[in-house]
Each structure stands twice: as structure tokens, then as C-alpha cells.
Length: 165
Image 1 (tube, one colour):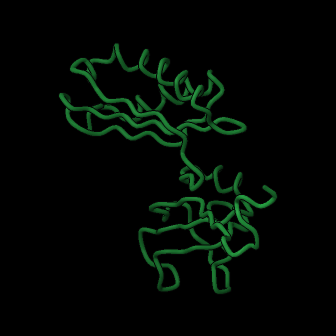
Image 2 (image 1 turned 120 degrees about the vertical axis):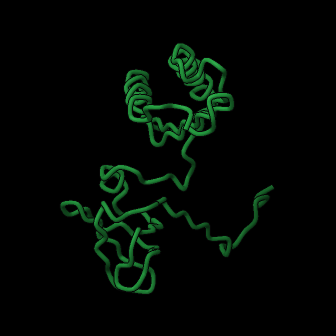
């Protein structure tokens, strides 16, 4: 990783994001000192616009440029987390209760490591998920390896894009 202290970098960007009205969803710093890549996924109430991305590029660049670990240059990628947003913090599961998600765990729970279903609740440090096919599973937050919102589109509805034309 290009940054010797990823927590410091995350804290720096997270604080600035909040000051600018954004939420830092995810930060990825990779590469070498001569080929660093910093990916910043931001969210904003009401969604992210191209203007938000342009604005964020400027203030993130101002934060990174003085850091010694980026003195040899870097690639900065700022974007929205997308509609299948990563669920990173416990607060994300609370915020998206009632939404569909895909969750992978670091070890098996009920003979499975991959779950798709609806987030029903957060109880303590466990996510309660109604899984596809029936049933409920309790997933300890600390056992989650990767999680994202899961969006499904129903293309079976009647009509076409040019209805009414």
C-alpha cells in the first residue's frame, strides 16, 4: 500500500468528507510509492452528482499532495459507491434495514459463507437477515468479510421504454 498509515489517511479523508457534506463509504489505497492508486467512494444525501465528484477531487487532491507518501505522484479515483453500495459500518446495516443485501462471511454459518436476503434488523453486533428461500440467519458483524446492497430489476413488467410515444 502506498500509504504507510492507512488509518491516518482514512481519518483525514473521512473528516474532510464530513466537513464538505459527504460520507466516506470506502477508501482503497494500493500500489507502490511510484505507482500509488487512491480510490475514494463517497455518498451524499440525495445521491452523488458529477459536480460532487469534481468538487471532491479538488479537496481530496489538496489533502494528498502534501503527504510524503504521494510525493512521487498518484492516481486518484473518486466515485459513488453505486446502487449496490458496500455495507462497511454497522450503521450501514441500520440505515439500510429493509433492503436486500449480499453478505459473505469469513467462516461458515449454518453451513454457508454466502447469503442473499433482506436486512431485517441489527441486534447488538448481529445482522438479522431473512434469507432467500426462507429462514432467518444471524450474522455477527465481526464475521462479515464483504457485503453489498443487492438490487434486482424486474424486466418482466408489461410495456416498453417507448410506451406512449
